[in-house]
Image (cartoon, rainbow, N blue to C red; front, side, top):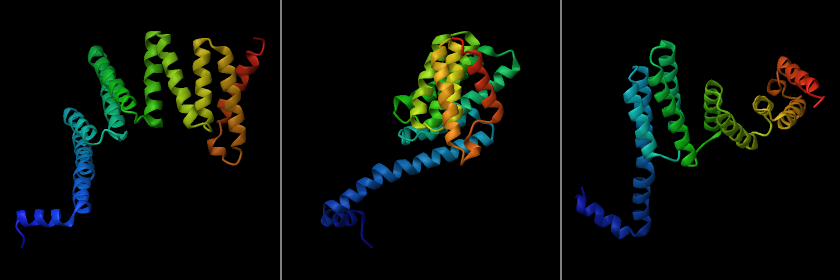
Length: 218
């Protein structure tokens, strides 16, 4: 069998294509493998209720493949679930806030890395809405509306999303924008008559129509 030096001599003799294949394995296949191993470790740690090990594994997954959205979202979900459990205890509000901040940080990191998919945008907007309502901070609700508008551009045929924007604008006192989104939601829903499962639920539709009628006077 060839020695190590002999194998490298053979590769070099084969020219650039062989060298390129080696480089691709190192730069692509190896990070993917490490990413998958880190995600597996995170799942095992989470099933074992080891939050610290879970977060460490997800951090490794992000380092190995920063262009994939899944570990950012998983990291945010873990942090949010921990925050929820801490809030249920009623005596650790500061710790809960720290974990909520960590959830926000994870989703913001995905946006900064330009890998924010629709799930990340939806989750990030949800956190802003939750915090904005809890703290009475309309700037957070405005930020949520911007994210949902960005999401609407990616999912233009989702009536529930457009209706949710209507609710948010209504809450902010932007009634013209709210009415516009409500009307769009109804129109999108009507266009989905061949896919009734994707339409607005009857109760939701009645709620929207009632709000439009009640606000028709300006």
